[in-house]
Image 1 (cartoon, rainbow, N blue to C red):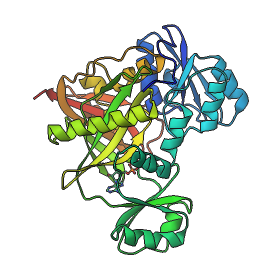
Image 2 (tube, rainbow, N blue to C red):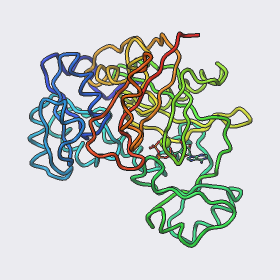
Image 3 (cartoon, rainbow, N blue to C red):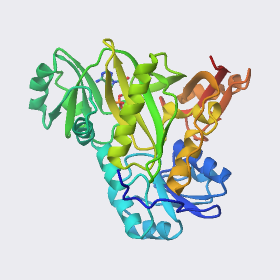
Length: 363
Ligand code: ATP
Ligand code: MG
């Protein structure tokens, strides 16, 4: 497919690129960009953010502060995002100032609304978990019945780490609608899966596509705890997962790194859960176990540079350090484990504070 994005380098060493969002993904992207001679400017509403402390410059302002966005846009050659809920109006404003935003607002819009996302999956021939639209509390029970009585109600907008979700089994508790924020939602069939895998891959404006070996992901309470690489699923399944991801990236005319989260069902089918238009927690190990990590790969794609070699030279696992787990950081400084901490000041319950990557020789 022909790209609507400019092809070729749009940033050179010495240039500044912008990142919308100031969390740990922005921090790791900024460090990768620095290794390639680029400056990073962060735009975030958060004071003292993890990314701002490794960046050349930071704008602390709300995403609807047009004057600040214009100033930010004038200071950079191109921008990217580090969390998918950046308002599309903000990326549009940067684009209209003549600075490409990768991935673009059209893609972000699709990822921000679970209904649009899953409808898009269907439209391009990627099978999502069965779902029904829920616009009010009275829609829940009929939708649950249609889906076989076992499901999960998810708010369409602004969910992350399992927030805004309620598991429904058989009956609908009175609080369900309020628990997802009493707003537009979807009900998804509960998938009794063999395992969860994800594909983290990069695509350039010229259509070059490169994927990392898919990891297997363990969640509990809706939060990723551990990614094991490579996934234990058979090769044809992993190849199919890669084909699905390429189809998605091509259909979006995507530029940058994206992740597709998939369920492998007990009868061997792959169903799409969701996609993330950004670097992904389940890809954090790539910077320690692959020739090119996901953060460098994303910066290369954003800048219009050729992609790097994603070859993996080790097996292993990535373990998230959540909340107070991070206070035990010293115990991970042993035996070749690689510790990454995000510099967050306070360890709230379930908050992603860092991760550890443990490697062993490739089998
Ligand atoms: P994140 O943005 O952190 O990936 P999220 O809030 O968007 O999370 P989901 O990816 O929708 O949430 O769900 C989080 C986890 O909950 C999934 O990875 C999976 O383990 C479980 N889960 C969600 N939906 C289903 C489902 N339909 N069937 C079985 N498990 C599910
Ligand atoms: Mg998810």
